[in-house]
Length: 419
Image (cartoon, rainbow, N blue to C red):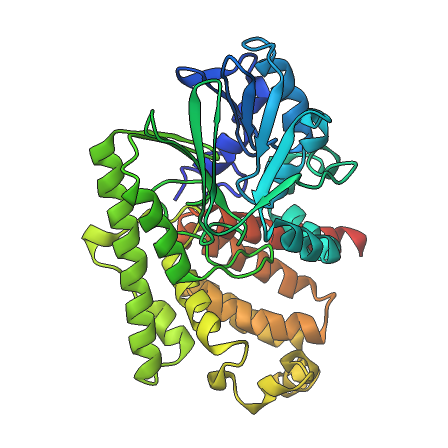
């Protein structure tokens, strides 16, 4: 738990890294001729005598700041721009760097990713703002004002080129945050620029299905992509937010990540075949200490759920036959509240659960109480207490979890203020 049980982003490493570019005045040289501009997603300028290569443009705001930073170290034209995936913290600032003389490179599935992303833009942005609104800043500083299409779409076999005596290899890693994910490999320097292949944190549980809403990622595809990277034997990895160094350290940690996700996958499949229900597996699948990864971004229990849905789809038999129909459980909330003697009676029992240290049981009851009587003052008060207790019990250490609880409290307070 954070020292004060905070429900802000303070003290969370991911949030600090996303915001770390705000005070940056000059690019950081991570290796000779490898310059970093920090932001919601880091951009890297790889310089050569014949022109430069930009890996990721960052968000629109990131790009405007990044161009000024990179101008301090190179006046060469940007010849190539490589997009490591199809999220706005990679493509959002393309319009800032794009010229008729440079080539934007992406995987062949990138246009498809962008089509479905734009088709669901309101849905995705609503979910993202709910979680990240206080961390990443204004939407207008993230998304582009105009779409810049790639000039060169590469296949699964990858792509290689040389510029100014520097060799570049682009390798497809579809297990990243989008299916169009690639890494940029500098074979002579043993440096891999991997974007968000691991998510924002190295050594963390991957986030196979984000709470903001996104296409699920496949566990075995993630594992294969990390194996692809490990086989290169990199001595330095530049992620979307971190600089990881040391061949032995990288090999050891990538192996642990592979083995941990493989273990979770295997136990999830075994449990499914044994007839265990989803929530039982979410509680039971816990890696041994030697395979335990940090959980500030992804969580084991959520990955168990993602694996379950990857193979099974949306229907969970444990939820009963009503799961097949569009009549929500909340439709009978007024009847349950009536039988209980009113929403306040349910809220009072929920308060008892809070006193017993059982916030989730309390929230189940409060969902019924508030569905039956949305304006119940007691239900709102008890729900707020239950959410605060939940944050304390979970430790507030996971970004998605803490910010989701904070969003629930914020929406609760807003509803109270409106009444």
